[in-house]
Image (cartoon, rainbow, N blue to C red):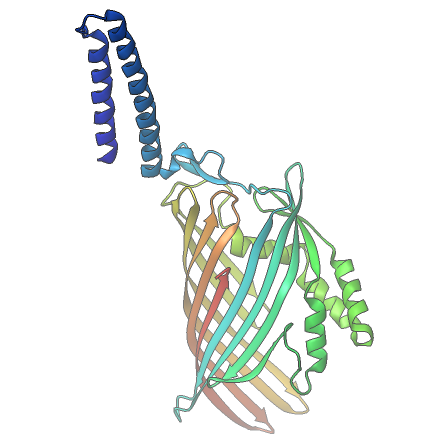
Length: 369
C-alpha cells in the first residue's frame, strides 16, 4: 500500500512538471517567466529522483530477497543455493554446550534419582586463508567447562578458570588449563566437506611441554582419536551443513537416517530436515526425528556374571539458523528426549538377582546460544 502511494505521488508530480512546462506564462517579461519555469523543472526533477530512490528502498524492504545475489545462502530460480563465503582474517564463533538430564526410577519402590551433566567447549574459529576450492580454518579452544549434579546438588564443577581444584582432581585441572589455548587447522571446500585436518602433532607437543611429567601416551592417543578428519567431518555434518548436495526449494524436506551399531548396543536415528525460510540475513532449517537404543551385554569375572539390557525410544526436535551472508552457523538447538527400561542382573553359583529401572533422558545441544 505504501509503495502504491509513493507511485501515485511520483506520477502526480511528473504530470505537474509537464503541465508547468507546456503552460504559457503571463507577464511583461517573458524571459523572466522562462527562467522561473526552468527553475521549477529543476526542482521537480530533483524531487522525482528522491521519490524514485525512496520507492526503490520501499520495494527492497517489502521483498528482502530482492538483493541477496552475493549471499552465501540464496534463492536462485526458485531453488536454494548454499556455499560458504568467508573472508581471510575473519573470526567466527563456535560455542558448543551439551546438557544431559536423566532420571532413574525403581518401579517397585518408587525411589528415583535425577542427574545432570553439563559440558561447554567454546572455540574461536579464524579464517586463516582461502584456497582454490575453499578455506583453511583454525579452531582454537577458548573455554572448557564441566559440571555434574545429583538430585540438584553439584558434585563437581571445574573449568579452565578454576583456581583451586577439588581434592583428588589436581591433575585434571592442570590438563584443563593446558588444553585451553591450543588449536588445530581444518581445510574445507566451500560446501563444508573436510579435506584435511592438521596441527594435531603441534597440539600434542604443546600439551607435553605444559604438563611435563604428567603427560603420558594415553593423552596423545585420546587426542588423535578426538581430532581427526572423520570426527571433524561429523561435526560439520551434524551441526553446520545439513544442506543436501542438491539445492532445495524453501519448504522442501529431506531425510537423514543413521545406524550406529557396536558390539552390544544398536542405535537408530531417523532425522527429517525442512528448509523453513531463506531471508536476506538468515536461513532456517527445522529438525524432527526419532531415536531408539536396544542392546544386551554380559560379562563374567571370577565366576560372577553381570548382564544388562536396555530398550530406549525417543523423539528429536531442533532448529539451525545460518548467517545467510557467510553460510556460517548463527545458532543451533537440538533436543533428544528418550525413555525406556534398563534391566540389570547378577548371577553366580546358580543364584541370581535382577533389578529393572525406568530411565528418562533429555540431551540438549546448543551452539552460540
